[in-house]
Image (cartoon, rainbow, N blue to C red; front, side, top):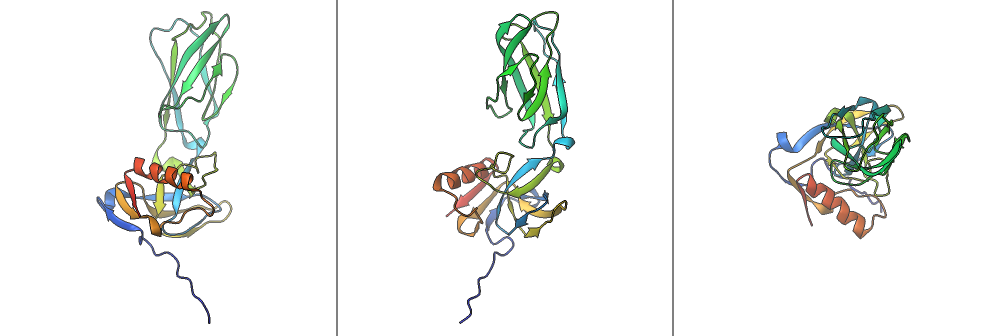
Length: 222
């Protein structure tokens, strides 16, 4: 007897949407992807598409200048303000904490040493040394068109490890090829039994993925 396995159908995971115009977006699938309906998706930022600006702050003692690298960010960068705060003063030097827009600490950054994480920059020493409490803001602008979506990978370190959307349709892309599909990105209830998760995902990783979805207003029902 021949056994046939039926694949996922577009949108079968959906239980409810606040409004499909609001709950869905047309997203760009990155190169070399095989995506099925109901698949959890992460996103990589395209670094060359991102805007990065150093925002002046008042009250600093130090007058060194921060210069962004080119490109200024990696694929993991978040939209919003990165706050750099001097935590240790030193003659012709100094150490800064680096806090992401969502409150994570990714420092330290040292004056005159290139910093290369989600944002990339060098703080030059000035004629007046930085003192503890001096601050610098780096403002990052990430628009939806600046992201390319990929299959969720719990072990990723490039943005694929954070779930941001659920594919409504399938998509297959080759090397150097991208395509657009509709996806649920916010304000919906979904059937967890109809979602496509990575093979071998652990219970803890699944819980983290569902928590990521909850941050987007997507509730998983099992």
